[in-house]
Amino acid sequence: MLREIAQSFSSLDFFARETVEGFITGMHKSPFHGFSVEFAEHRAYNQGDSIRNIDWKLFARTDNLFVKRFEEETNLRAHLLLDTSTSMYYPSIQNSKLEFALKSAAVLSYMLKKQRDAFGITFFSEKINQQTSVKSSSSHYQDVISLLESYRGAKATQNQTNIVSMLHLMAEKIHRRSLVILFSDLFDSATFENPQPLFDAFNHLKFKKHEIIIFHIVSGKEELKFNFPSGPHKFVDAETGEELKVNTDEVREEYLKRIQNFNKQMKHKSLQYGIDYIEADIDKGFEQILLPFLLKRQKLN
Image 1 (cartoon, helix red, strand yellow):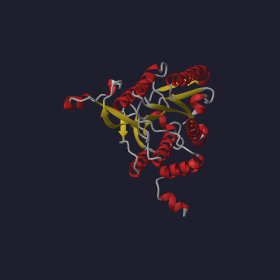
Image 2 (cartoon, rainbow, N blue to C red):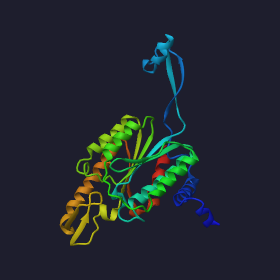
Image 3 (spheres, rainbow, N blue to C red):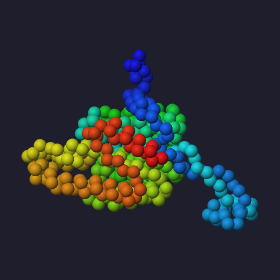
Image 4 (spheres, one colour):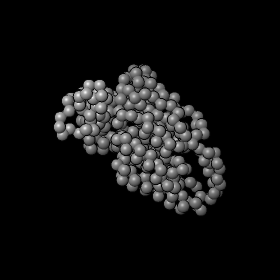
């Protein structure tokens, strides 16, 4: 019976349902909150009202002053941004950084749909590769899940990352205040030594009143600890194909120094810019990262 139920859903759909239904049993409120502002109605202008809210177009038609009244939406709008550059396929198809991102996106999509919040998903590398609309319907959820499934087990194509230009583009494309969730390993050669352009792009989103959550996805064993055998080793840049032969003992100290400096800057600047930053080490497992994060979010809301 259980097998038949599982087969009636795509595997990501079933995973998302099982994870969310098991997790939210003890939750009393959503880990996310609605904060979009919507136009409600006009009312006559009264002395002392801010002229910022005067509808000048209506004044031109009627010769009377009216101000726009706004009210907060109860529902959230969320944009999930998934990095699909070649480095996200590391270290293996079954246990890749991309697999973590796909599972997380599926779980969050199901949770948002269950809360009747609108959400959409964007896949990017050097540019935006695929993008859905932002909706809250069950049929939209199924479309998103199908799209997520299409990336599972797919062979990696050689794509580099251009996070900065993509974030600036999204800041211009998203016209309503939203929650923006980024899943990426942040391996962008243009910003590794100096991440300030990356935070300039985040600040563009913050200027538009969006809330930002970063899942910095890494393979901790190799990428954070440089746990490779001593001696000669050939490294291949997944995104450019460039090969580099080095003695691991000779470069380990400098590599660790640089990666630790980058991660330190990411954490510090995220705090400075009011961005929720999560270091997601896939070696720790999905449940040890996403679920504690959602619990923390729930307590803060």
